[in-house]
Image (cartoon, rainbow, N blue to C red; front, side):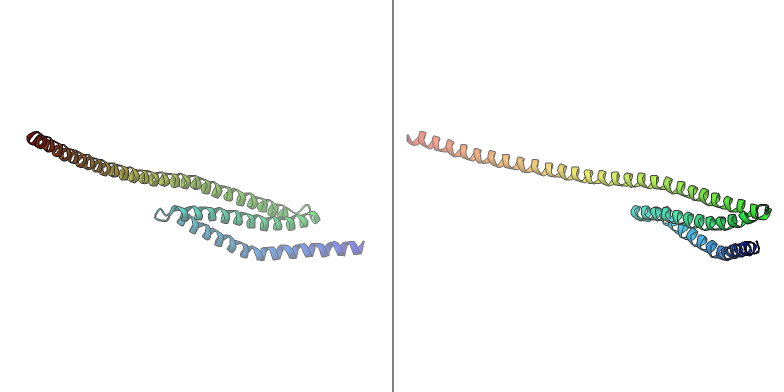
Length: 195
């Protein structure tokens, strides 16, 4: 029985040590969350700046989704590791109210991280749809300008073609008049000369 108690005490000490190390790592994890939050905000600013090209804005919105997912994944993984350690310790001390509170707090933090990420994803999706609409509108405007330019060229080409046809008809008419005039002259000469 003495060995079992010693082994159990060693396990508890090891778990408590893990919890302390996890607590020390929490500062580092919070700093990483902040860094990812800053990176997400930079992508939002690029996405929301209407002077940027639509392609750049769409790229920024897609990167924003990747950052949101990475931030959630890292946060949840860290909190789940903490939760596992606390639950192992609670298995050894089931009546410990402080451990129960700590576990409830960690579970809340996991749910909070997921909820926050879901809110950010909803915002990103709304902007994704808005950017797609904006891109389609810009494309329609561009196509309208292209068609307008083509119609103008056709109209100008038609006017030039019409002018050219008029000129050809006029020249043919003049040529026929000359030919008719020459024929008339020949007829008149033949009448006068009798030939």
